Length: 501
Image 1 (cartoon, rainbow, N blue to C red):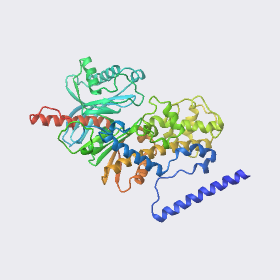
Image 2: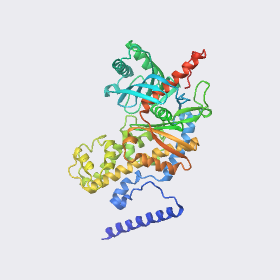
Image 3: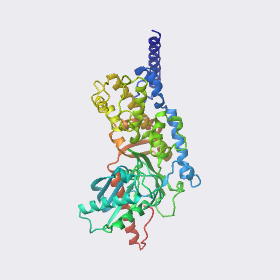
Image 4: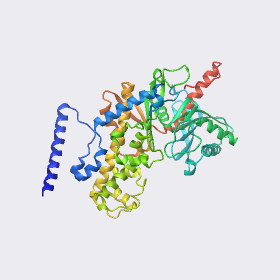
């Protein structure tokens, strides 16, 4: 009786608190449009709340994250502080977006995960035509030697070029290489560290364009020249900037996460050379490494620590592990397993699959949050696949709540990163290019980011623009701009290739 009375008092207290905040927000005219999750305790009790509370961050937490990120970005831009800055803020040497005069056929390569694409991109003003083919990167190549990786890439290029009857033509190429790199020029990029499951030997610290050209030379049957290497964030930005000149930020939210933005050239102390051109440069932030110095420990849960411990790059890419699709499903699995072991889910009964790392896929999170809330057909199907024999509607509600908590935290932390960049740029209106499977396919990620960014970057007009095939189209556009500038230089009697597009 006493326990029931205490639970009733908890419910009443939560209801009164919610009503007070709602009435106050009406009074000041600032109702937050982000749909708030019902309090965990009210729905599931104190024990569940105690387990899940660390996943629910406050706006104060997000502001602290933003300030820490800003500090680390400034350190990354500075020549004297870059070495010790977790966020490296690499210069990309891209200083111009397409002007609409680019034309011709270009190859584009897109390597950023287990799938590798080769594309033929035809440009004619604002018109863009693309033809592409996807090739798999087998696990043994992802973990083998760099020579085998680039030989595999060259083989894929050969097969694509031959299928499209392009063997007799010299083709300029743009390479989207979505891993942390320190660029020395538009077509010179040194891999700093592998991410996303890759561990190829003999690549870190080496110029990936040179490795690609060496693989092409070993074949002797390809006439391809790489004019530019970019990452997927730059590709997303360039793709959207082709039609929207206000686009100044690019974000990837997929298997991994990263961001780029347009910075004033005077602040880019790490850029080499003194090429003429616009007083701006795209910066590849490599924000996935934010927190590698411990600055995000204050929001790190036991679930996050387990994910990091069992990853192939423990202690690295800490921010990415909070927000990217590669880890979200595993965070949910660990939370569900802790609830189950405490007798709070599935009647305490587990399965081999649910006890297996990586078995609760991030796509399940999207499916659970898209499910019908009356009968939960997709959720029950998921756990049937995972061999959980008895799943009640209340179990489904708790699973959905856990997925929502983890998703919201990821979306809000992503918003904190976007808001940090928007506040830093101080532009009154900005279009943010976004790409990545998590952003595209999660049912609520876009809406959550839109609303939380509004809270964290007040006074700035912004919109999120989905980048259509930015990794392919964007790489081709950078190569096309480089090709145009090279032609202009030759026309002026200067055959040297500019390192700044």
